[in-house]
Length: 286
Image (tube, rainbow, N blue to C red; front, side, top):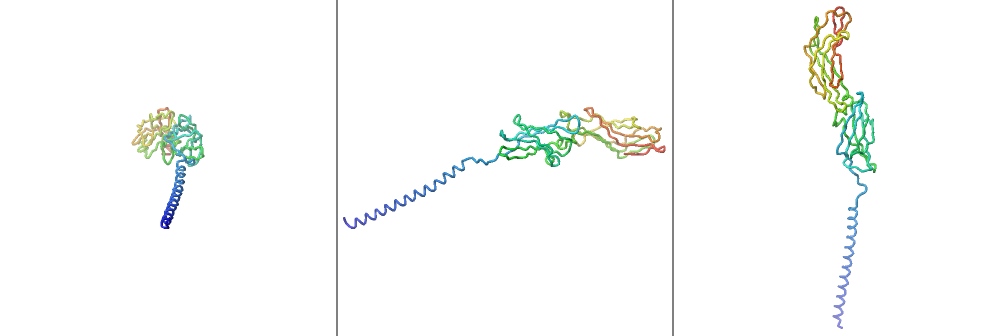
């Protein structure tokens, strides 16, 4: 065998060895880059156990049940959550001037949270629902608040339960046997919260002049709807009453407003009084 042939064979074997080494190295690198990629994909696909649910309401409403006296009412909540789990809980929270005065656990009924709170008559109530999930996370959701009222009657509960009337005399003259109301204003406010949401209105209103409590005369007023809900008012101008000539010393004339509501309630308010002194009638209050 010639020396040239042996050299060629040696070179060929060296080339083959180099090629094999490079091939093994390439396979090793490909295996190292593939494995981490597969592990990352598996971790991303796995669900996260620490994810939290969005607790919110899709619908909420408040209704009211009146008491026999106008000193308070029962407010009823119905709130529908966006989603519900059997381990969730909720409370009906009522604040007054930023202080919690009621926190009532809700019942789950007909796919909604329901609860009732008995509240004394006051103005400035705020109504909320607090939902707590099984992992302890919670959210307080406003339903009707002084800052964002959906029903001002329930926010100002005391004012909405009350009914009253007022009589203001701006100017009056007493000459001889004539008492003339030159300028005045009458107001009747019917309750805005009533049993079964009855629409109570002003049925009639009268100016009544009395002497020592005995009615002398009466004039009917035409009451028109006022600016506030279920309020009625009338401007009084040049309305005259006849005063008896034989009023004795110390006797008192009183002008008052009498109003009757459609639910039968009678309201009254004093507007002015005049007293006989030293043979003349002097204005005492007005």
